[in-house]
Length: 375
Figure (cartoon, one colour):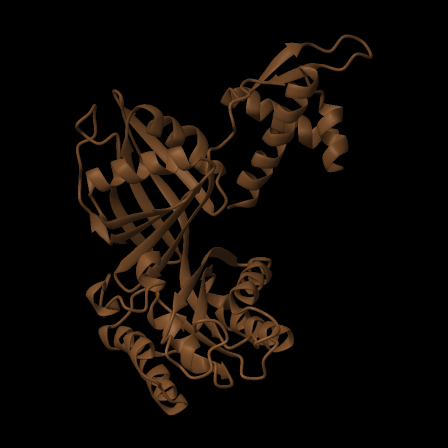
């Protein structure tokens, strides 16, 4: 998000909070909270009045400061985060909402619309969509037509542009809420009757998967817990958007698994210039925190999983693999391995990226029957 949009969001949040608590706010209230000159805050108040977000409720009288009120106590944005990663000719769009109900609404209507989207999946409040570059128009309207659809996705330089067509509630979200979501660089809209079409601009981030295995012992630690801690740690770095954490089951018939032989992977969206720094931080963190000396991690860019890499993940559920097989596979598909014996399972975790939870957790399921894409 640009600095101007971020500052606008911060000012509006505080103005609405003070309005709810006291019924009004003054320029001094906001200036004091942000340690900002009153003249700067007054400029913002004037701007927000023009935008219709703030109302002047009482003019200045002598020593009594002017009083203002936020024009609405509706949440400033139901959209928490909107960000994108690009892998060749495909883009993944991530839209995290405050409400599972709102996320389900968008999932339903985006899937019905189709347009530029190849697939639509929801995990709680996170909507995750795969798109192909270009424009594929849809007609929006009343049921049974979709209320909203992504009609175009374009990659230009460092940015991804989503073209969205909508009516009703989704139109309000596009015009009044999306610009305030973390990750959004800008929103432009135009209206033709009841239909609103707009463009949402986000950074073209790099998808990074980090597989993790063998960080625990029979008496200490748990790989899933360390993976979650790693996700939280990396999320604090500049230029990183956390996506999520997954657990996957590997071959349950190994002679010495700690607890059924599960591994984990985490997913991140990273500014292109920060990928090496993220990898270095991940290695350092796991080396410091793992209970086992055999810890291993695998790092790979790109959300598209080639067919033969997926097959490695299947093999890790069926047979006992060697480190040599892991190293050869990693070199072939651009993954970086770090650590001890755990790199075998860590690479398997990366090979299973993109599969649904029920497939990840059932080692009897054929992962190669659930390819999302191949490269």
